[in-house]
Image (cartoon, rainbow, N blue to C red; front, side, top):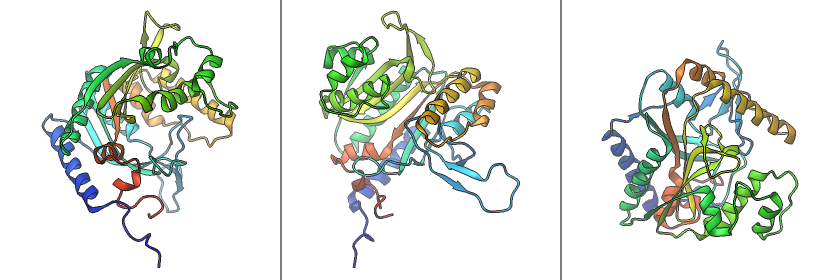
Length: 327
């Protein structure tokens, strides 16, 4: 008889997850941030080229739009619609889904904490993310030292190169590993340098807050002028690493519907060039932006990864009741 019926996580990990969830809810309740629930199925998927969305077909009888629905990769779009409707500061703690990510640190179904602060910028929100991470670490008797650095300074300090100006050949040489370069764009090389050369050097007892990303990596964030950069724009986004593991990604949110529509179309063109599935465009989000998204900052935090670091494990299965292989 197979033992795959058994949980992949030990009872202590499940108990710690319950304690963490309760602590997170208490944290936001104490700051008057509203907990909400939004749809898991939507009419459009995520256009970001490096993220694959699951989809399902609705077979019932209802006049409710397209039959193809996409499992959310984050609750970002409906949360922004709530913000545009005047809900104010809000968060969601729930499951999200990403195709093509299974094993080691990834599971196709995982838990995300996403929240938005009206009137804040990305750097203010990054400070609150550090508070949340410290809150989690305190549950296991630990703490960590925050380290704030820009994207440009990070590459200078670790690799001695300027990520805004270095040619692709220099980025490829700095990677120092054999890899098939076909289909890789400049930002792909930068991502590989972070994951393979820079992240592994982050101290286990550090919380690295990285900001000032290239404008080409803005995603759904604003871009702003940077006198040091060439080109002279950077994305107003940040990532947070607990030790060598990325745990959060946040933006000073883009409010311009026209600009956002253009970014969606650029993403779709890149996906089409690679032969990827077209997830469509979330027109409800664009309509919400046209109505008026308040100035705000938002962040998505991977709860499972946070738990992994709290328990000192490199396997996401160790913090899931049943991982993908046992689901």
